[in-house]
Image (cartoon, rainbow over all chains, first blue to last red; front, top):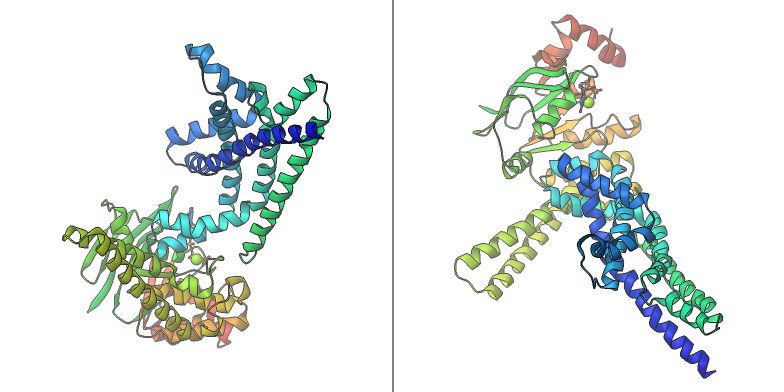
Length: 215
Length: 280
Ligand SMILES: Nc1ncnc2c1ncn2[C@@H]1O[C@H](COP(=O)(O)OP(=O)(O)OP(=O)(O)O)[C@@H](O)[C@H]1O
Ligand SMILES: [Mg+2]
């Protein structure tokens, strides 16, 4: 029983790392995705093309590969060593998810009728005012469902961090398999399910809160 | 005394010239009706007047101020010009995430916030402490916002929708939506109010309530693009008939509808008007 408790506690510690990766990635990728969206919609080619190229590369290669490239790349290319593992995870995840988010934002923005922006312009609103008071509220409503899918994937993708030895929950559980203990690995599933369950409820709440907007 | 003068408006899209030198004058408080076949450039004219399109050539004089196409204007100056003109769209374009009241007061509220921020800067420049300036600006903003709320309700009452002030656009009929859009356009007190076929997206049954609302706005300077010939004849002080990007004929409603001169206008009226009223 005390073994079970110690397993639980160390899994919980791993889970804290999992949650941290998840939260920080979301916090950074949500706004960065918007920057990429606005960049790739820009009329200035020198801004739009690099943004689109970035999205293409990031969406076209596995996250695992990106993670390895970001962690080992600087050492291989420039001989810089000691790049923080956790930082590498954050950079790779943020970049990856920002690109996926940006595609969702782009689709959502394309679906907002031109007339909305024009109505704002005619009322003397600035571009920034139009973005925050006309476009964004309608965009949030439109992207809620596809965003919830991506966010759920992120929860599970955090487990990729173990390939550069960041001790998230799966990494911790795998350590136990070395000691011949298999059940902690299956035990992690309970943590994920709990997390996903809470997110599902949150997204449902958000959908309810925005139900009054009919777009 | 002419109040608004539009001179020689030209606009091309790709290789095709849509406006080929449009001009007209409008005294303050008068109503100009613009009629013409589909594709003759009526919408483009209104979009140019509201700075949604930039004319290639042309000039606007309004109350002593002059806008000349081709000159460079800052975004701030364009905004100031946009505020002089209001536009009611064919498809309403209400903001779906805001109530009727929210739609009417959004732009004035944003303006109030800007003015409060400017006031704060001004007070600090005049040597007032930061804290005190913030408090003064907040009080100023609150007062402006309260005024806006009162004004929004007045406007909704004017279009007969005060009781629906808390409704979202999708909860309103097309006619009601368009009336909210009219209230919204009036909120910034534009000098010229433009309508682009305000009833053409509506069922005939809902058309009349919108026309009725527009009738109550007599006294505002207005430009009304419309397919409702009887309405144009009734409310307009002057009518312009546009054909292929030009003013083909202009005159009083009496002149345009009872004694059209050009062949184009005659055949247009035959299709659009006499049929409708079954005079011919
Ligand atoms: N953004 C644009 N790009 C290209 N062509 C355009 C654009 N806007 C308008 N046009 C063209 O300009 C011409 C005039 O259009 P406009 O909408 O001004 O006509 P209209 O008189 O308002 O017609 P309707 O009665 O059908 O509303 C049309 O041939 C249209 O295809
Ligand atoms: Mg039109």
